[in-house]
Image (cartoon, rainbow, N blue to C red; front, top):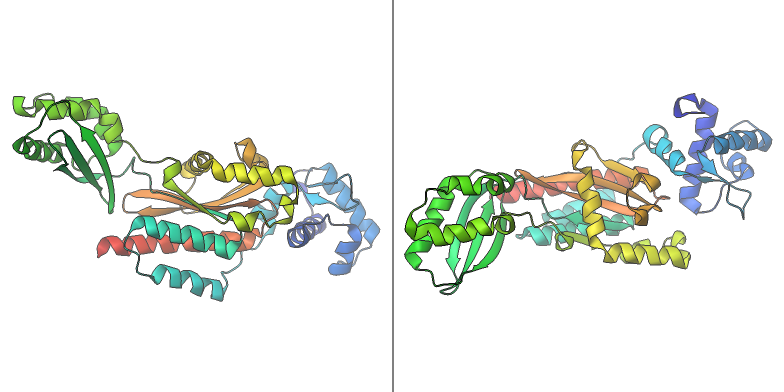
Length: 350
């Protein structure tokens, strides 16, 4: 039995099993279904349908219970074909809007607030990645002298982001050299992406003046470091650990340990969120259980959406047990991503 071969009665039973399991975290039996929903069929008929759904891999039968629970395949069919995405609750919408109306001048602070509001409303683990600079165009580069052998490079990315890095020299550098090199770098690199700069830096500066060679050579030797994206475990905000470990799934010590490990290893989350870049950025991306590449995410679902700041973008999302309220969480993730994009856009235009 494939997705397409499910008849309306089978679809209804599968929908009710998943909805009940999401509500109760307990395996769902045929009597539970017939008592709660007016199907006009007997528990025996429901049992037969449940057996067919189990044989086809949509539900499973835990050893210790007569009830059934959804499989990854069942959840996927539910999300794609059976679920109606809820309109976001008015009170939750007001709460989100109020947070984004706060006076937040720093991008970092705004991303932290976004992560907090996501976890607070969904009661799940929320994550927001820092925007990926790789494709952002360099708008302006400034060089600030910190000492006779150290400079601070401040790079403004089109869209309002800023990256800074300190470079040290083996010998002293003069102020007039710094000014001349700054002008030259801006003249030849402005408008290019970090990726383009790294690939073409040596070619663009092979004809520099003798006075500028020492500094330019240092930039050339450090190009992979200077013009590199800052994405790492430091570039993701994760909140809501207290929320997710209160879910019934984490009464099991092994599962409790798994979520702690996941929170501690932030690089996994950055990697997983970056993997969603190839998806349609206008849509919410949903990955369930075994669809997640990393073994640590086999018991989780991931719901993410891209947000934009000028020419660059990041991701925000929810990680939680597969037994999550998908219709509600999808609506919240979608709305928060739109609000974050709009807020960042307004900040840039100020």
